[in-house]
Structure formats: structure tokens, C-alpha cells
Image (cartoon, rainbow, N blue to C red; front, side, top):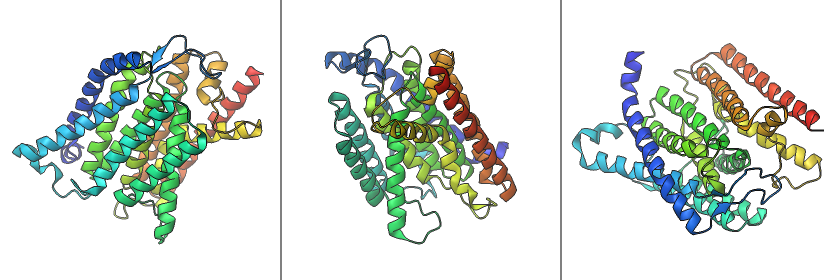
Amino acid sequence: MIEFFKNTKLFQDAAVGLCAFFLTVFLVPLCKRLAYRLDLVDRPKSEQHKQHGRETPLLGGFAMFGGWILTLVLAFALIRFVPCFSGFLEGQADFSVGGRELLAVVVCAFFSLLLGFLDDRKPMKASIKFGGQFLIALAVVLAGGLRISLFVPSELFSIAVTVLWIMFIFNAINFFDNMDGLAVGTAAIAFAMFLCASLFNGQFFVSALCACSLGAAAGFWVFNRHPARMFMGDAGSHFLGFLLAVVSIKVSYYNPEIAGSRFAVLIPLIILAVPIFDALAVVWIRIRNGKPFYVGDNNHISHRFLHMGFSRAVSVMLVHLLALTIGLGALPILWGDGMTCALLLAQSVVFLTILSVVQCAGKQKEN
């Protein structure tokens, strides 16, 4: 175990994560002042599903992006100009470092932030937002080389599946941002799980990207937890959704030399099971009730806990515990045999069944 932590360059990842954390913490107050100056605030009950009690600034997404990008710039400056850091990228082929792949991720992350910011400034039509998400997803797939193959030898199939996955995660995280600290905390847990998976597979550059994203999310969570002093807005949810989609694709899950089953390709679905399940559930409820699926409401799993009598802080904590429990169950699939994978997948299904029961119980109590 000691040798494992020594070989995975865990301490570099810890340094990257802490740097992103403290930079984000530093930037949040600056973005908060700017938000009030630009009147970028979320006012109580400006929409039916919003239940917060005071005006809250909306530029949290820019604080996270700032902490994230400054950490990347600082890391590459150290690698380039400080000899003792130059060996960090030896043997790493996760990204074409300094090339178009990483540049595509950074540029598309910025445009994800910008798309959400424009929606924060003036709510845009769903078709325009989805169109923007599609263009960003297609751009990072074509320029960044991101691919989900699912063992199907078809380039067109791979591109289509990858674009759909990125767009789905965009919206799953956007939908999930419905209570103080909920989405950013869940994203931080997911980044931590992807970090562990990439470390296990020796993908040290991807693990550094996960650590950087985790640090930025954790830094903002300090201000976004209940009672929130700042919201990340659609800008932040689009930024986090994009990063989650990217790292979930870049991490390698099926390694024939280690994994005993192709079930390993399902790991991203399990790590992100709670926001994915929540998105599918609320879309189904909205369609069943004859409402547009993209219009917000109070039918999320966090609201179900609230309707059952839990406080907002406890409701968020329960969702985070569910996300952590299911996510931890996904990691042994990396090295487990077929039976182990089947049992862990069954466990995940049981937890999602519990979520379904909670959904129904919360609805009955509400009625």
C-alpha cells in the first residue's frame, strides 16, 4: 500500500488540489463584490421553485473557473521552468500536453461557463441552450479527441455517444443544483472517485486534472453550503458538468491486465448515479404531469427529503452520503472479477431503489 501511494504521485495531486482550493476561496469574495456591482444576484422566489430567503450573488462559477485555470497555469509554469517538477509528465499520454487536446478542454470549459453565464444574465430558450451545449460537446469531441467506444468499432457511433453523454451530464448537474451545496458537493465527491480510479490506473495527468477540479469545487462549497453566501448559477453548473463529463471519459476503466470484467465501463454511471437518477426521475415526473422537462420544480430527491421532515442541511447531507456510498462501491469494479462486479452493480441498483422509494414517499407526504 505504501508503494502504491508512492508511485501514484499522490502528493503532487494533493498540492494541485490544495492550490485550486485556496485560489477559489480567495476569488469567491472578489466575485461576490463584482456580482453585487453588476446586479448579478438571485432574488428570493423569483421563480416558483426557488425557496432561498435572501438575495444571493451568482458568480460562483467564475470563482471556480478562476481557481481551476490559475492552478493549471501555475502547474505548467512549474513543470516548464522548475527542474525538479519537469519529471511529472514523463510517460504520460493521457493528453497531448501543450497540444490541441488539452487546449480544447480549457477553451470548451470556458465556453461552458460563458453559456451558463448568458443564461444567468437573461434566461434563454431551451433550444438555444441545448444548441450551445451540443456545439461545445461536439467541439471538445472533435478537437479534444474524447471518445466513448463501448467496444463498438465505429467512429460515428463513438462520436455520437460521447456528445450525448456530455450533453446529458451538462443538464444532470444543472438540474441537480437545487439546494445549497448540493450540486457542488456531489461533484466534489465524483471528482474524488474519478481521482482514485485514475491513480489506480497510473493516469497521473488525468488524476491531476481531477484533483484540480476537486479543489475548485471544494473551495466553492465552503461558501455554497447552507446557508449559501454565494450561488454558482448556470455558469457554475455548466462548468462543473463539463469537467465531470471530460474526466469521466478520460479515465480508463477497463484494463484487461487488471479488470476481470467489462462491467468496468459502467463505473462513470455508478459514480454519477445519484444526479443521473435524479435527472431522469424529475424529467419523467414533469412529462407525466404535462410540463416541459426543462422547467424547474421541487420534485428532486433533495426536496423529497425536505418534505419528509428533514432540514435543508440534513437533506443535502443525506444525498451526499448516498452519492459517496454508491461511488465507493464502484471502485472495486476496477479490479474485481465478474461475480464481484455483478454484486456491486446489484448493490447500486438497491441504493437507487431506495431513492425511488424516497421519491414516492416524499410525493405521498406532499399530497
